[in-house]
Structures are given as C-alpha cells and as structure tokens.
Amino acid sequence: MNTPTPSLPGGTWTLGDLTLERFGYGAMQLAGPWALGPPADRDEALAVLRDAVDLGVTHIDTSGAYGPRVVNELIREALHPYPESLCVATKVGANRDEQGGWPVARRPEDLRSQVHDNLKSLRRDELDLVYLRLGDAEGPRPGSLAEAFGTLVELQKQGLIRRLGVSNATGEQVAEAQGIAPIVSVQNMYNLAHRHDDELIDRLAADGVAYVPFFPLGGYTPLESSALSAVAARSESTPKSVALAWLLRRSSNILLIPGTSSRAHLRENIAGANLSLSHEDLSDLEEIGR
Ligand SMILES: NC(=O)c1ccc[n+]([C@@H]2O[C@H](COP(=O)([O-])OP(=O)(O)OC[C@H]3O[C@@H](n4cnc5c(N)ncnc54)[C@H](OP(=O)(O)O)[C@@H]3O)[C@@H](O)[C@H]2O)c1
Image 1: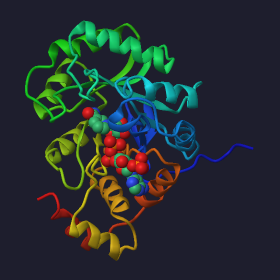
Image 2: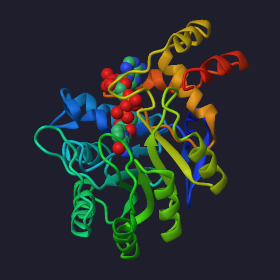
Image 3: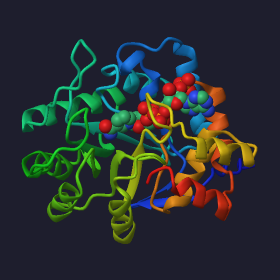
C-alpha cells in the first residue's frame, strides 16, 4: 500500500518544472553558533532533517558557507540518496572568515569553486537550485550582477545547476538577472516587521517567480511586537505561528524556510503555520511593518 503524502500548510508552488510544498526548511541553524562549526547535538541535527522529509518537506535551504560545509555534510548524511521530490537549494557568493564574517566571494573563479564544493559536499552531479547571494551581511547593495550571474548561467549550461535564483538582491538586480536568464526564486530578508520587499513580492508573483523570505521568524532577533502578541493570545497560538501563517497568507508565491535545530520546534512550526487568521488579525498585523 502506498503511504499517503503528508500535506503541509500552504499547499504547493511550482518552481519551474518542479512542484514543491510551500512549507520548507532552512538548515542554517544546524551548524554551531553563528552558522560556524559543528552542531551542539549532531544526532538531533540529523533527526531534524529526516523528520522534515518524513513530514512532507520537499524544499531544504542550505549553503556551503554554513559551517562551512558542515550543514551540507549533515544533509548528505541524513538524506542521501535524496528523494526525487526533494529540492536542496544552495547559495554561492560569500565565504566565511574565522570571526564568523561573510566576506564577499563573487569573482568567476570563486563562484566556480563554490559550485564544485557544493556538488561535492552534497554528493550531487547537478545542484537543484543555486542562488547568487549579493550584497553583504548588512543587506542588499546596488550594482551590476552581470559578470557573477553570467558565470552561474555558464555552469547551468554545463549541466551543473538545474535552476537559478538571486538572494539579498535589490529589485533592480532581480530585473537585471531576469534579463540575462530565467530565475525561479528570489531569497531576501522579509517578515512581519521587515516589509521592504512588498512591491517586489507582488511583481514576482505576477511573473510566476517564488519569493523565499529568510529570517521569517526574525532570525537572530526573534520578532516581538505587542500587536503580534495580542493576535497570538486571541487565537490561542504563539507569535511564531502567527508570523508563519501570515507569510503563507501574504502571497501564494511565498515559500517558507523557517530554521530550527529542534524536532519539537519543527513540528510546532508546521502545526502553527496552519493557523487561520481573521480579517481583524490581518488588519492588526498590518500595523507592525508600517
Ligand atoms: N540568503 C541569505 O543571506 C540568508 C541569511 C540568513 C538565513 N538564510 C536562510 O533562511 C533560513 C531561515 O532563517 P533562520 O533560520 O536564520 O531564522 P528564522 O527561521 O527566522 O528563526 C530561526 C530561529 O528561531 C528559533 N525557532 C524556530 N522555531 C521555533 C519555535 N517553534 N520555538 C522557539 N524558537 C524557534 C530557532 O531556534 P531553535 O533552533 O532553538 O529552534 C532559531 O533560533 C536559514 O536557515 C537559512 O537557510 C538565508
């Protein structure tokens, strides 16, 4: 008998030629503090990855820079050989230094070496989705991406990358990338309290391109606001559940990648994102990002 496919909150989104659950998983929190070094609890880290896939997650977000390589190696150990339905998305464009910084590394030779490094650490012949990570740790920065993005397009033509995206990008850089080659996704910082990309999300939705908010729960600074707490209390839920449910409701092209290093939190987040928000809730939440 076939096991029925579990259904996750938010339904699905079609990413080019691949249909994904909109509820995914961000793996950065599996490395040590500040995404450097090994996890505090390696067995739990492997169990979180396996549970995510067992619960129906088909989209995992990583980067060779997490650890570095630590998170990719955990993903490989937990999940290789990968289910066909699984998209492992990775990012290139930055390295790590010993202080935990993210020095920019976007010369053609840097990008080629990072793509090969991801192929090796994930044990893949072709990467499912590669984002060119732009800007710096402070956020997006203006400037042409043509040379760096062109390098990834070349690697895509060589069969090393299936799909392309951009991350930490300005609206102009997204448009510039779209003028060079099709992108399936944009990954930028966005959550209830950081809504700079509202217009971009709507533009991408019209283009059929996914938008993947990083720090959906606020990242290293958990989301806090009296309106959020009030909505959570009224719906007998938690601020995290409200934040995730709001993102799913915000636009159908939003794919979630909340991060956690705990199986209990993974389950809480999946259950919480199913919360249905009333018109009153939505209007109260609207005030947070204004
Ligand atoms: N493109 C980029 O430049 C970029 C930058 C940053 C992140 N990302 C990606 O975005 C993903 C998501 O971002 P993120 O993981 O940094 O931040 P996040 O999803 O906003 O929040 C993760 C934090 O929330 C905590 N958390 C999660 N669920 C919880 C729950 N139910 N109860 C209590 N605490 C909970 C986690 O701690 P526990 O581990 O204790 O659950 C962790 O500290 C990353 O994993 C990464 O893949 C991309």
